[in-house]
Amino acid sequence: MPGAERGQARDAAARTAREPNGATMSPVHILGDRGEVADPLAPYAEVPSPEAFEELVRAAGMPTRLHDIGIPAADLESIAVQTATLAMMQNAPRAVEAAEIRSWLEAVW
Image (cartoon, rainbow, N blue to C red; front, side):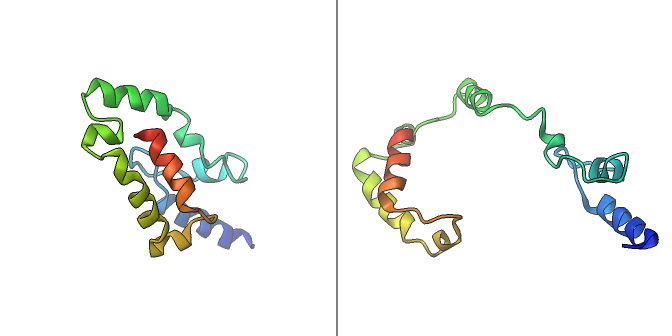
């Protein structure tokens, strides 16, 4: 890519890229200070762990389990089968059977 086109591409990327807080990222964030592609996950380095998020939810008094929101264990099989047959499941990165979905549901019940 010629220099002028590379500069235009860098400028366009800087206009559209956003940091987690919504701020626009500078070309250095996107291309690094030497023009190479920077680590795309760098802006998320300080994102709390799943455990920290769960603790926040608990501290707020929000439900964390399916049974906390009134879903009976007897419904898990039906939910798993219905989920596995949803048309959007064809977009999943790998095939997922109802039995696997059921095991996930049981883990959070």
